[in-house]
Amino acid sequence: MNPLSTILAQSEPTFWLPKPVSNFAGPVDWDFYFVYWISIFFLVLITALLAIFMWKFRTPPGAHAQSQNDHHLLLEIVWTGIPLILSLMMFWYGYRGYVAMQTPPSDGISIIAEAQKWAWNFSYASNGAVIPGMSDDLNDVRDKVRSGEFTADQAAAAEDKILEKAGLHVPMGVPIDITVMAADVLHAFFIPAFRVKKDCVPGRTGKVWFIATEAGIYDLYCAEYCGQGHSKMHTKVVVHETVDEYEKWLEIAGSYDETLPFDQNGAIVWKRRGCISCHSVDGSIKVGPSWKDLFGSMRKFTATGTPGELLADEAYIEESIRYPMKKIADGYPPQMPVVKLTDKEILWVTEYIKSLGQNSGGAENPQEEN
Ligand code: HEC
Ligand SMILES: [Cu+2]
Image (cartoon, rainbow, N blue to C red):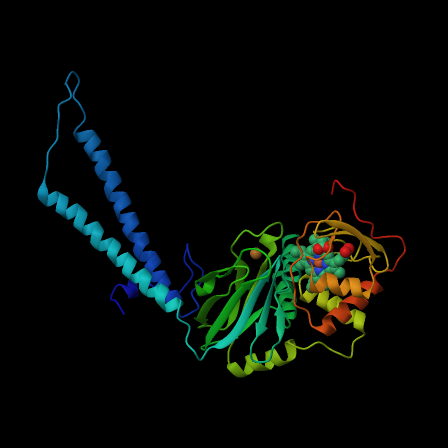
């Protein structure tokens, strides 16, 4: 390491940066403060010289302007040479860090982070479990803290409960190899405490890797404006102390309780897989139609430009989930992402939708002006 490192690399949160807890925090913070202090130095130097020269060389009353073209070779060399060296250093440290971040080690734990409007899903390569971000539940907790309904302790307890089956979980001290994807529009995977950020681009995969260096709970944000619910697309990273602890968690969190009735599991799917951010179950209209009284109603839709009408039965629901772009319900935007549910999850969701009222003349398509 560089002797400057000890001065520039931080180990505590600063005014600009949160507490650094990954292998990249050292080099990233070093680069940041290197550029920062150089900028401050020159800002002060140049502003001060400007003020001094303005005063010193001001035109005396009555004087006439004269040409002052002149050349000072040594000065030219110095004020070109020093910035050149400094900017090459900035480039070099930045480039070195960038290459390290783009090269995941091959022995990491593989996880896929998929972004959709407006939720995260994390799939774990070791057992195929899909764990949701549960942004809505976490946001509820924050709202309750803000409104005074929850104390800090109650909030922490509620958050722990949610994170038993949600969030991105990783063990400490092991390389984590994350593939980022997007189901619909641009999103970005951003964990400030780890100093990693990567765009999630529909139709492409991207890579992020890191080694977490301290157990704890940290924020994970979407850092690319992705529409109405963008600001709520926020979840947590849980760093476990040991790989054992992490594996134990994964085994339990990844499974549904198959002894529950289908509709109850369907309600879990609705929350877990992010349907909740667009479909209400109480009749209110969010981005998509409410699921209340949907089953058995007549649905008006447009399929590749042609209007049609169908009964919302099991087949219609299944098709709407597997191929959301085939039939676009009238009055709604074609905004539903392809969320890859398992056959069981589709069955459970369908039972859940049935349990929310059937064919009682509800679930009208909204009026045109919506
Ligand atoms: C980003 C918002 C969004 C998310 C997330 C979303 N949907 Fe949708 N969904 C829509 C919109 C908008 C429509 C209406 C347009 C259309 O038919 O595609 C719709 C339509 C549907 C329909 C057909 C309803 C009708 O009235 O014709 C079903 C069933 C459905 N969604 C199920 C789901 C399930 C299950 C999930 C979760 C796995 C989900 N949706 C997640 C936006 C969303
Ligand atoms: Cu987003």
